[in-house]
Length: 242
Image (cartoon, rainbow, N blue to C red):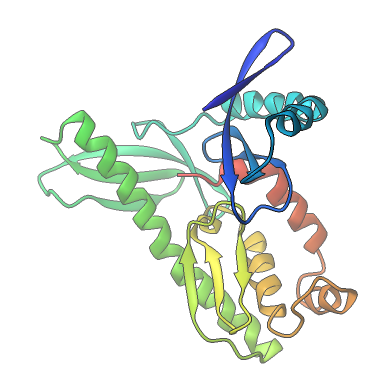
């Protein structure tokens, strides 16, 4: 963990040296709500310091966003009252004591009801609650994304091979040259029209492995609102965390 001083304030950030990085870049980890700086492996210290100084206005702007997000949607503590999202709707975690050791989740209106064994300790419980919520989301994401792929492919008629659900740090989806599709399981927290956008976006890469006008025209055939969807993901990605 590194830190820099901005307006007499110590700002922590993560510094990562990467053999694959070609340039210095900064980004916000929306899940951990911290600034991450990635630099080529042999970058000199004076280059790093110069880059940081040039990026201070951007850093201040991102810090304001993080503070706002922490106020409006605090990071989960895996306790009663935590707010998560499911298909774009806010759901409040409600823990129900149970005699069964295996926890279960049901969405009931605006509640995410989880049964958890009444003798579970606090530390054990938090770990299990987090694991159970993530498992629930992964299973639901697999169901919904496969369903939407089949639905849209009735129109596009494109060939794809393996479909994988991952927890990608900086991508909502990807398409490989081997026609394998990858999706971030956290998409299940977004509204269905946003999920549809990402699904169609990656499907269209099966035909156009670029972001040319032809690619966007192909996307527009079913997702004419793709610009709004991209904007929504950029502005609301902090909500899609568990």
